[in-house]
Amino acid sequence: GAVVSQHPSRVICKSGTSVKIECRSLDFQATTMFWYRQFPKQSLMLMATSNEGSKATYEQGVEKDKFLINHASLTLSTLTVTSAHPEDSSFYICSASPANIQYFGAGTRLSVL
Amino acid sequence: AQRVTQPEKLLSVFKGAPVELKCNYSYSGSPELFWYVQYSRQRLQLLLRHISRESIKGFTADLNKGETSFHLKKPFAQEEDSAMYYCALSDAGGTSYGKLTFGQGTILTVHP
Image 1: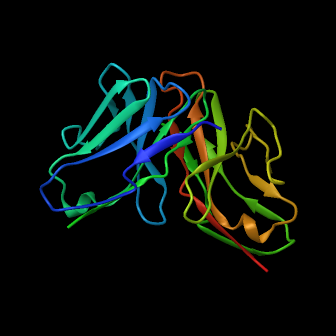
Image 2: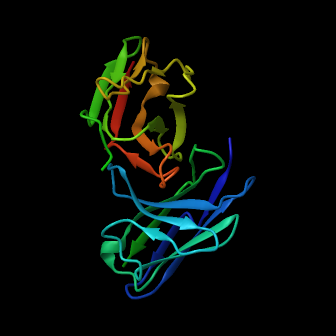
Image 3: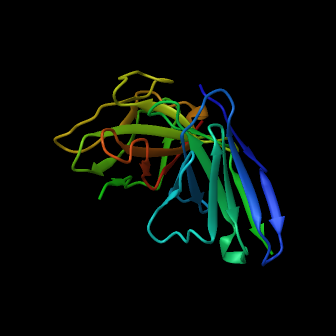
């Protein structure tokens, strides 16, 4: 299957700092990528749809100024958690789809101290 | 609004026993249904999708539009099947193409 690479796998930061997470499609081009958030032993919650060359589409209740998404190329989308706070600590997962099958990154565990 | 419900958060069976993970959905359009699996310390990966009608690792799932269900079944569970299973729905023909709505997940434990 297709490969989606996510980096970093884990990040620890101080409250108030910003953190950038990268999502790359390694062997296909993705005009659309998705960003999810997963709480421990819970389901994945879609945060936003990242669209190459245009603005991301955010789900209801997700602060777009808090979670900045940039999809500057057909193989890279980035999620920046701005002014992170402890409540932003979570597991963030991206996915991309060469067809109507989504392939997932390994996820990024963010811990905000 | 689309919704996926997995009524069982935990499911335990013994090796060799049949297993069924339930999934019900609500959606007004033409959905595509998927089962994703997440093994311990691994990424989420596709197990099967309803339109392919494949059997993967012995698992099958049939879309029942009348009952709006897409239950996952395996006649003889194996220990290596222990994992978290997610049922997911995609809007196949709408404007949110590819966007997935996940169920809450079922943790399957297969005991030796």
